[in-house]
Length: 163
Image (cartoon, rainbow, N blue to C red; front, side):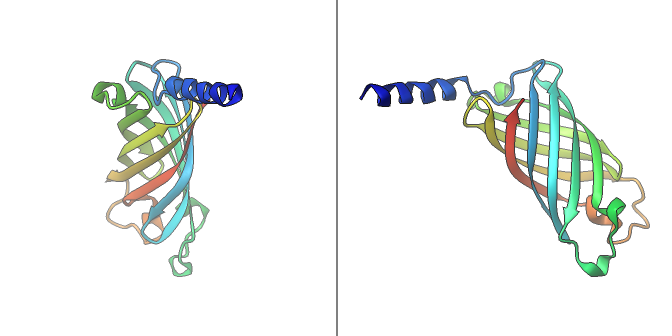
């Protein structure tokens, strides 16, 4: 019986200490699947907290499962973005384990925006989802279907980790 009580206490402390965004010095790594028209892919992000509600980071996407007829090469499938997030989970005061983060990104293919949410189950592990869309494409008049892979609405879901 003592072991069960100790185990419950350990899990309870873990859940109490879980926090989705801790402010300055916070380090988040996320990896997941991305879904969009003409392909699915893998998405990874890293965010570093520079203030109570602000983080900066990098995001990369590689589109897999692209239809053969698109004739997409590596440069069409890959994108790298610098990103800015406004972490407003504490402003909304829903739960310490929940963070909502609208943001902007400046990438190799476009200037875009995103809206993400993450929930941490322990101090180190959580789940996230993110919606992103281009706000301005660099070459909007002459994009081929392959070049348009990273210039469209995308949904990502996956795991989030505190580093």
